[in-house]
Length: 289
Length: 84
Ligand SMILES: Cc1ncc(C[n+]2csc(CCOP(=O)(O)OP(=O)(O)O)c2C)c(N)n1
Ligand code: SF4
Ligand SMILES: [Mg+2]
Image 1 (cartoon, each protein chain N blue to C red):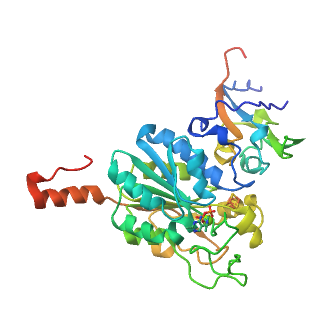
Image 2: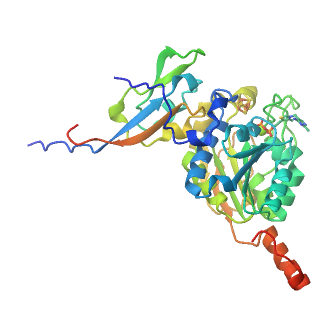
Image 3: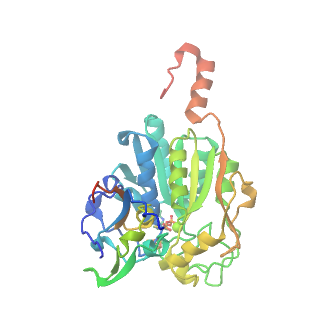
């Protein structure tokens, strides 16, 4: 007997979604929705009250995430979610601010905001969905695209070196750095809970299938093929040296995943309050404590 | 002598919302016990959707719901009532 019920009222993620906007725009098999499932469950688990949580996205397929989450969510301009999140966090330090966006958005056009937020150890969480392309605009090359990738702007293949994102984040000063894939749903959820509860700049890179643009143009098969590839070729190495975790070719023999960095360091506001209290003494009113 | 089979205290349940499904079949592929299969039927947008074909195989782990990119499927564990 098969049981098909046309009601999904009790789906545990439902209460975090703007269900009136579903079905969403993402293609069949796109990994973005899977990561949203993980995020909704992480929000439930992390213990942060919903009115103390804000989510900021930029522009792109991944940038649509904020629009589907029933939180205080902001859909900002292309490349600027971290700039927006900086203002949000500094104006209201009680808020936990999460940036959820694509690779092109966060480390292409928005790369400068990314490195400086990490350098300042701003107390925000950045979730970067890496599909190796500017998907929404049809597949231009991003700074994450591995060598030989075929993109609309590199019809003969990518020949420039790409970013190794965990290393970029770690070397700029992030206190929490992890990489997982859309196959590793339980680990993604756990990493999100840890990142949400981390004080300082926390960063999670999630590799995710884009069957419509990246996989199709590079003849890499379906979303299921990509998830199976992640399953078979991911090697979990917690604490790995981030210099060694770059994804330099299209289908490397192994993809190193895991939690690479989890350290303690004063965040931006803590450092600011300490410094100005020392310099100005009683004249200084500490902010956000 | 064969010992009586241990009575199950919980069962797994999978709920499907066919109208939300885009037919990626990721839940079918990654269900650890093979409890779900793709239906021959179409939803109103023309996509095949999953069906909970083998409830006996389901452990209620909920992985289908973690994977589903369209929030169209979820699984859970349900207590079996006394005498059921
Ligand atoms: C200032 C500006 N430049 C360019 C664009 C066009 N644009 C829209 S989405 C996008 C790509 C987003 O890529 P990514 O962040 O990787 O997200 P994905 O679609 O891959 O999830 C671009 C270039 C824009 N909207 N605004
Ligand atoms: S184009 Fe790619 S990233 Fe965008 S929704 Fe489709 S599969 Fe997802
Ligand atoms: Mg992208």
